Length: 92
Image 1 (cartoon, rainbow, N blue to C red):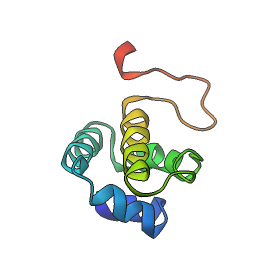
Image 2: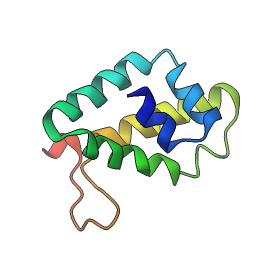
Image 3: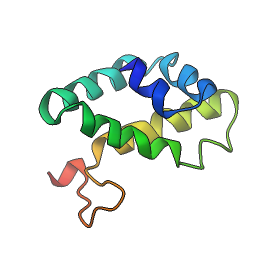
């Protein structure tokens, strides 16, 4: 999971996300998704982080909070770039 995050995010953001207190929760969610849907799907979720501009505006602990929030949001949804269907986890 760490390698997937490092492939998608710049070094600073990847290090902040992996070093966060919430990382075990995020990694467990990624592992759960990967087991059900495959690592390609997890990668597609994480790809959306690279285009999330809200994380680019933050620094320090604000950056970590935004990265964690964005990651959880993307992992909970089933919406991908180019997809006509977007279903949040609460609707699945």
